[in-house]
Image (cartoon, rainbow, N blue to C red; front, side, top):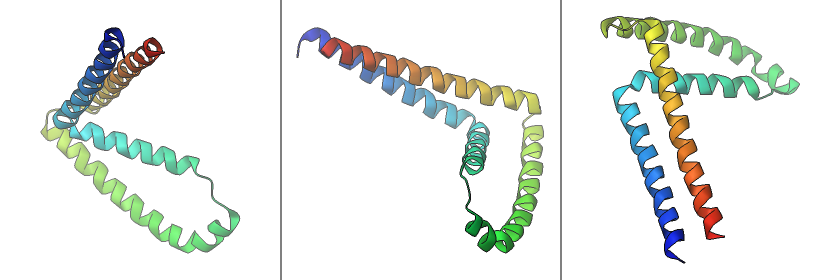
Length: 125
């Protein structure tokens, strides 16, 4: 392996480490944003997974019960979240902006790390 290839591999490693640190820092400074992101991803996954007719038939009674409990839990979580935002002096829009900024930063870090890795691999070949 030549020195140029090793430099590119080292650059990719450093970019990945920096991305991991940035993500960890973002999680530590804004845990509510991570919770909101996790809920959004879970809701999206749940919406995209299809159900069969037999599943619907067998799970309908359980689903109604779970749905009622989920609505109650969601309402309680929403009220608690709004209360925490108010206690922290944040508006709903400010929290949304922080979540957006966090995900943009993660996407940028991942893109940079991926580009560096691709360049390193291309130069190796």
